[in-house]
Image 1 (cartoon, helix red, strand yellow):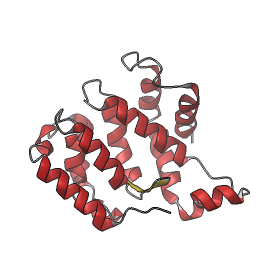
Image 2 (cartoon, rainbow, N blue to C red):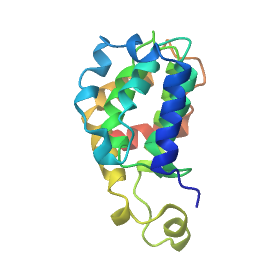
Image 3 (cartoon, rainbow, N blue to C red):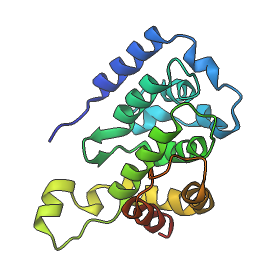
Length: 183
């Protein structure tokens, strides 16, 4: 299975910071990011630059690239949440709730993916276990569900938000987010 290495994540953050040196200052005082500097991202195998990527989501010039790099940093593979995703999820939820965030729609779509990948895997399905791995080997799933539950009010607010584009939240994604928030 495709895995994103720690060195690859570090290199991606370094390239982002080189290309967008002003981006980390964009959201320095944004309330949604309060506390992001206090997390020991390296303890999760992530680059220390995660707060810069989160702030980059607020810089119109850098937001699209910040979102792309952040997703790669927070995922360990195509269908594998990384161990830092539960720590980043509160920030992503709060940013997605802010209509002024340049990549808000993209963040909502990231939340769909995280919700879907955080659901428990059917232990009786050999195919699911082979493809996604067992829940015992992926504690980040349960941790993400706990974050969705803790922030259920934000999730419900997003689902009811009339400022999001029509059709952005199809019924299956709505159900997945609600299921994750009901953990």
